[in-house]
Length: 140
Image 1 (cartoon, one colour):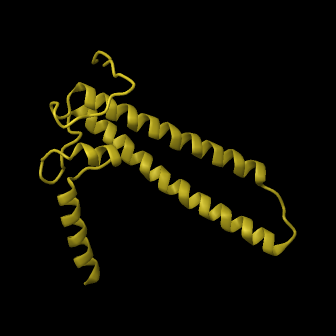
Image 2 (cartoon, helix red, strand yellow; image 1 turned 180 degrees about the vertical axis):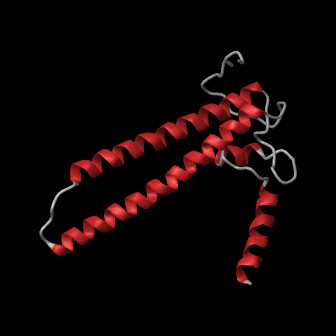
């Protein structure tokens, strides 16, 4: 097991340091773990809220409105569940030493991109090519 890395509170990855050094990896690990904890906490709150709100509403319009709100909330939670899977995959890539590198080209993903989207698996250029190919095939 690795020794814990001391990470200053004000640390931000910089382009002038070695790519995916211990500090950068720890920064992204903590960012991903914090994001995952927030998502799981929101999910628990939603489940508790839905348990508390279960009731028989006699007015059809009110009932329909509440059911629509619940459906929307459940779709949001489903998207967040998928995001938790992507976060877990990113954490595995950190552990395996593959984090920060494009799965298509093997090139480093920019730190700005990773900071904005820590689950990114491709460089911006590779992602754009992928989306263009996807759009062409979808239009067929």
